[in-house]
Length: 269
Image (cartoon, rainbow, N blue to C red):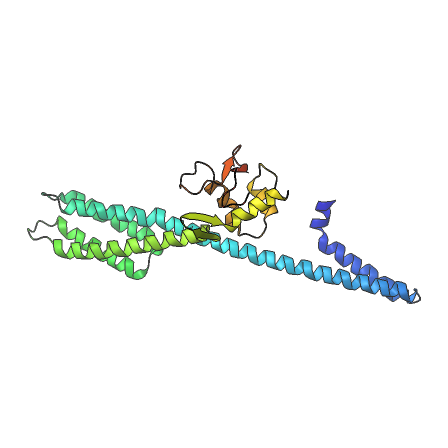
């Protein structure tokens, strides 16, 4: 019955409105008190429908915002994994290759070709200015395969240092953005993270709204005011034995279900 109401809520409300209007218009001789009651009901249903419509609009806006946030964080992670980390490794290999006592020309050519292909595939992940500097550095690298005695060590070294600093700065900016995206509600108390999220979970368990062990879906229903990413990340991120050394707030028993670590943290007992 609940599902029928949820799926056909709009149609049911409209049908009630039409039915009441028909009663008022076709039977004007109805007792004035009854007619007034019908009008009050009509106004109440209209107000209810307006509130429900507003809720749906807000939910839709929230869903769109969450989708946009997820796409953004996914792209940040993609940039870290597919561009920044591999390119820093390439810079390290370049520096190691050109400072060998006897430069391996074939290795330099292969390194140049691989980097050209890498830039061509991933240049959309970085700014145009950064891309130009990386391309220029790669051109200087190519000169090391020439047989000439004089190699552009100084020019390569200076530009490599500049490029490395730019890449590392952008890398750190993305990591900072990801931390902020995944820890929206975090506050720092000394060196320990004190979460509004955690407090809400403890309160929900204490007042019976959330029964242990609980899933992320149970968490979402009991504490509905957080971003979707919170429900997907927070429990596992703070489970006992988590790989990120985050504060251990939950025991995972069994996989996908969680219990609060006792006693509660931050004096919430």
